[in-house]
Length: 354
Length: 79
Image (cartoon, rainbow over all chains, first blue to last red; front, top):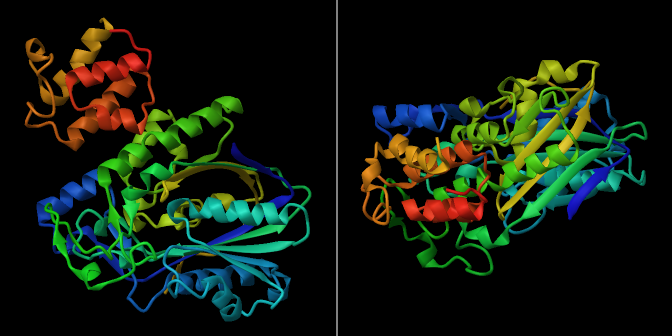
């Protein structure tokens, strides 16, 4: 069983950065007015932030990190670990972006740096690794940066994918703290489903060749080449509304959690409204405790959960009173994770726009 | 309402189906409206009606009236 109770680790702060440019569903040329309205009403993503091709996920994460470090008042030499979680690194396949960020952020050469490319569960993967490494006190402070520019991985003429995603970079500050409540993290993997979310060419299984760039028309407004990331919508949907829900339900039952009284907020990966609504209904969650930001930011990948904290719960989580969060993420792999954590008095800078 | 009546009602809700036609020949192949969205609607109603959480394999396999019955049976629902 892949489950951890991470002791001695507190979340100190969260920040997020998005591009200034807002793209409305109506702006996409592959939608007519009626099609855009249907998309807005069903998928629920009315607008998203999209940066220029010159903007990398690491740039947004860097801006989020700089602001968070400053507001926390942390000395940069005190940061022992930097994790960069993203599937849109600065360079492919090397060097690791975390090493570049160590330099760009002016962190110490004694800082341990690590890249993790795990997609929509990325925040939980990165917090799991950082949390477990902090837990024994060998290192004291960690910065977890999570961000993606997912649209740039695929074809801009793929109607099944383009309107779903938005750009965002986030930073989460973790610290060794012997008084902290444990953080529970539970993970599962179904590798047999990997084809549902993949980029067929460009890795070492299928290196790029001229045919990697040849676009094929799959109908229904889907034009893409093998170098482009694809989504098998039906497979992803069936996975997303089933596996994560079962796991969350099991954890709620096992721990004897009262849905109404024991959890302050349920943070669900903002894949799309259909999926989140379905999970809320299946899990019988109190809707007033389930924040959404997908209508304004779309699916921001691993940044989804910390993005919700900044854009929808900033005021509440900054208060000097404890909040218990139950988080559910799902995506690439296929993988899904659940995280239960207590936060209090968080430092959360205002959303940064660049 | 019996479980079978509840199950049939799902097809009435999703397709406006005539109950007399529900049987061996009612499937994705014979019902023109039976696309992925309708399939997910059937699944959603099955889960809500019978308080189930179905696996992805069941959701994908729900391509006919009879397949739905088999899925319910596998999940302990007697029709």
